[in-house]
Length: 384
Ligand SMILES: Nc1ncnc2c1ncn2[C@@H]1O[C@H](COP(=O)(O)OP(=O)(O)OP(=O)(O)O)[C@@H](O)[C@H]1O
Ligand SMILES: [Mg+2]
Image: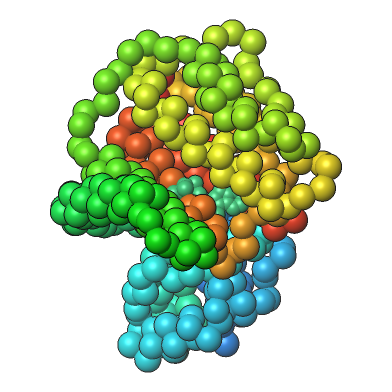
């Protein structure tokens, strides 16, 4: 009788414990579900062979795939280069956990997404490894920002060096130019020169003059680039400034089929900024578009200049339907002296200077380009 009641009590105790474990389990599950649903990071789990078992909501945002699209696939499939991701997984399996910084994954749309990945073994009750859990934090934006900062730093450093060199070269170039002009006069006055010799010498003098002018042009741009003068900001209407810039460039369009279309917002686009610096940027962007369109040829050659106002910034787009910039060259266009124009036509300073100017004005210069479709440069600057 007594043993019966004691086992009944025992049973009740176990039932109570079970119920409380159930509640606890339920809470843990809800807690994990909440993390998986709401974390902005990609959280995944794989089986022992590395095939995906689960994929968080954040993962869908980071890589663009829904869970159903990736379940069962090897996790290495999602890396940009499976061969570089494989060793990370292997080393995690060896040590039980691992961290890999800056792992390039591939977004569903083909862009690269950089992640810091923490991986750990998933262990069962018997202590066996049954899979891997990974948390990947998307650091693409941060990485881009860091690269931009490094680029700005590098440009500033190069700018300082270039300014010094430019300054030193300016004087000898001025002397050469003067000497060439003087030699030119001597040639014109010289008697006893054969017509052929005279022509040859005159051509040489012209070349010297044109080339020294080119040097002067480069050193002036470099000095402008390095000058760290503070922008002089005033209230101005971007639309007026753009119209003046187009009028200034119009002579270049006279005998071409290039059309410039305006897609301005209806009201004036007022900002507090430096008109002289902005004009320098717009001249370069539009001149680049004109040049690209001249290269393209044909009748369908358009530049569209559009504006937009967003809450605290304005956006100016210069869009052309020229040949576009090949993907492999897109990383180079903001480098100092990078140009695809023939000698004497371009110095390769326009875009790095423009980028510098726009960031000095607190804004950002970006671009998108597709071969065979065209290029769009976008300037974003704060309203004030
Ligand atoms: N709209 C565009 N379409 C195609 N390629 C472009 C366009 N804008 C720039 N580029 C490419 O980027 C390169 C660099 O441009 P950037 O303005 O810095 O120098 P540049 O125009 O060659 O010389 P500079 O502006 O100093 O006279 C160009 O030579 C060209 O190859
Ligand atoms: Mg240019």
